[in-house]
Image 1 (cartoon, rainbow, N blue to C red):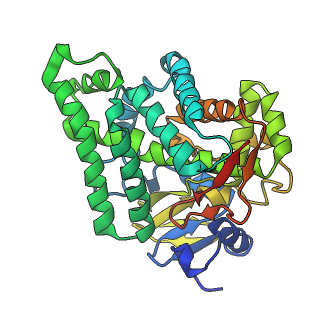
Image 2: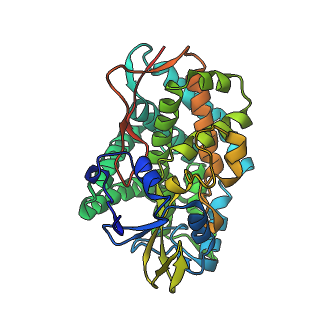
Length: 380
């Protein structure tokens, strides 16, 4: 086996999960065609995620608040963001997300072919996030179009195209925050306005900082929620008995089931780090300044930690790295968990069964995107 791992699934013609499953027992770390060191095993991924001194998160030339920051600077901005993502802050939005999900399900044609990713997941993600942030419903078609362009750009690997698509999204964000900042005390009382009034070190957040935070909350989360819905529906369509289990389960049990499905098939594949000094990890000596990828998808399928032939939501919960680990663990975990649970419960309430379409198997995404590109289903 060579030291290199293709970064584009089209080069190997198979599911990235299956490929890393094949690599992981023999190669705990591999180098991809970009020269990045990709950690594949649970213990190594977790060790790097918890080692904030030697594995820095300052990996991008673009401002990324707070996930691209280290040390006290990260803590400062993280404290601002977490205020909006606590249980108390999110509970008032549960009926809002429920209403969004019910409206969407009511609009879905029963007995016709639907794409679980784009027709269900993407639309729910956009509507739920807009409701949470106080963004106008008129942005829905623009956001849905951007999501498709963003996935296409990411799949292409074209840096110039990805930068152009990212700038398009920043323009959408600026169109929301600039009127609020100009309106002052007359701005609408919503989450985005409150964020615009936040301060750090006694000064207001800059426009660039606001754009970065909202880009992280929306640009990343919209695609992740849509892909997660696709994975969940594809999984349930092939396991009717699990659908019945969910119908009779408590909210806590449903959330544990969702986490276990996404452990097995995590659409959010990896995070990046850069070494601040020479490190020895996964049996290899890696130099200072090396680009590292923490492959969450592979780590969550590590056979030395999980028995993947056994579906065990409760037993696997403690080791599940679905939302990362350490100081940079996803601050929006509760928001994503509640949105996904509400969406899934609402979808399953009025339907007898979710069925895959004969002759139209789900289409996998290609690296660096995980999950499915398209999941044709029929709601019975």
